[in-house]
Image (cartoon, rainbow, N blue to C red; front, side):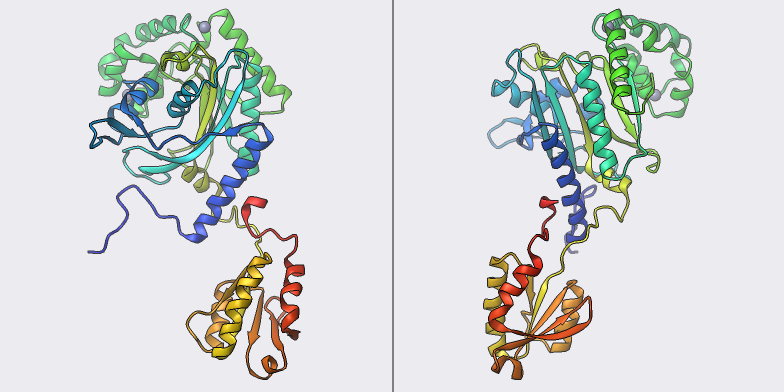
Length: 427
Ligand SMILES: [Zn+2]
Ligand SMILES: [Zn+2]
């Protein structure tokens, strides 16, 4: 049997990779405009970092981590999300000094052992941003506008922003009690996970995907009713900021983050076309996380999005930007092939995308190859033209043919391609 990709992973072939490059370029461009600096952290960290930073009781930590013991007996885990590593790095490198606001973005592979489904992989790419040191709510609104504009820029302008407040260590315990009281009579009907959550973390019952749990929790009190004054003021500030920035939103009290270091603002962007996996971008404020991981008490807020799911949501056509086709050098004989080889490298040094035949094929086969590669021009080298120091030039888009002096080839194409972007990075 030939080898294939492990279950839940996928290869990205060149056509698909162009869409990936496009999305990544859009994200990098948006981050540059908003003053985010890139951070690249290792793909694995100490297992305990995720247990602490993501939460012992979460599905991610209990069921989905790729953990292993290294030959040196270190307990390590492939990162299941981006924030814990970024916070670890920010603490390690002393980026979190008081009075400083640090804005960071990341992009890279992430690993979770989940049941593969449409748009859900065991290795997937995540992009995300974190802002440290700003207590909000202005930065919350700005970050949401940033996310909304990024999504609109890749064609997801219909994604709906849902926000909530998950309170703070002052008011959330009251809500936990209220939830337990409201669900006490129906506890036996909750799914086994929610039965466990009832004791450990009842907020997460609101998040359960099991239909019966959703029904049972539909009419429970909402956290907005028990928020303390500072949390209420914060949420009102976020809402006012969103209105000022023209970002549409709805308040959804079922968006929860169960862990203590998540505070106040929580949000999700929902796309209509993805079925059950409909959250395309999610995040929130985590004012307690930096301290939880051993750093100085520092407020933080961020979001993350899965790249596969974003690309699935934006659809096939997106990112298919018009890119210049190559100049294809077709050679008729051995002598012409030598010329083509030198000319191809010279043209590339001049910034002209160039392709040539490596298999000494017939002219007809080379023309087919040129078409397959989407060539804009075919320069035919050899025969009588070559003895006269010329080459036949076929314009594949206009289907016209002319003659070009060999020593004019490089300046001619340098002019044609000048100013045309040949990589998505320049867009
Ligand atoms: Zn509060
Ligand atoms: Zn449940």
